[in-house]
Image 1 (cartoon, helix red, strand yellow):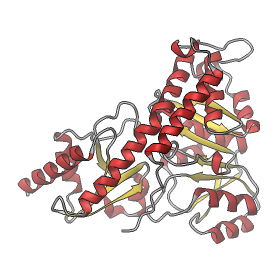
Image 2 (cartoon, helix red, strand yellow):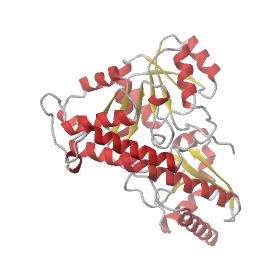
Image 3 (cartoon, rainbow, N blue to C red):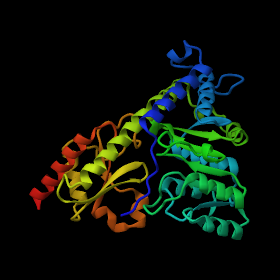
Image 4 (cartoon, rainbow, N blue to C red):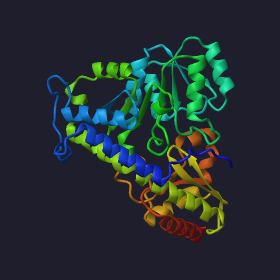
Length: 367
């Protein structure tokens, strides 16, 4: 089976990104400030904690962006705010032909946004759809794959859209940010959205980086006290951004070793193993028999996490053995019976091999 996973940054590149994040922090915070828990509330003149505003400036620096804002609602909330900043109800959004991520589909319905789809794998399709739909007011590009056949390159998609349909482009960077060499705005998008919970940060905090004119629109309407990211949360976001790159690069190395070991036939009963962005970059394991559901039950007994918390959150230490993603199931309903996804999280490949081998032995004993 052919898949086109996103290239992961190397451990050396991740180290440089960590150093950049720390350097950006030191340019905004005095030494004593970073050792505090930050301030609270809608501070006069800022309408948010001073710590939060400083953290947002740091994040903009890290991603070479004009501005950034932290919002509630994690990655989903970030995408909703970004859509709100560039569109109105009843207007048309350009999306990819593959199944839309479920929470994004909910956001589009809530905001009353119409959609037209082009095949982002084919630049000619983008040009044709843009030419046939002059009413398009913005575009949304998901960085990670929405189906296993997806192979598009983010910079090319954004460049093609901008050439034939000069509208704001929003990227959903969830599961890709700090794993790939560039984020959405560094690829040419106007706004990039992601969950900081997926980057070892606090629960429920999303981030939007990009053009100041759009971020200012969000700030204007994001004024209530209960909507603000408090100082201690903003500092937790920064700590996550510091530690996540190296942690995720190690995870990518483990994935590469697992593919080599499993495709060499180390464990009988496995037909294939390969990497795919589904949504996070994970190991997909295909079995010779339709035993995926039983394998998942056995793996949990052996220490594997049976479900995500935030998909690579700070709580997820043990490897996750889970069903394939909803977008992949929508594209191929039968895939759930023969395939599982494994995310190493913080574990090594020996741990995953042990659990997978034991799970298959447990299933065989029950057949």
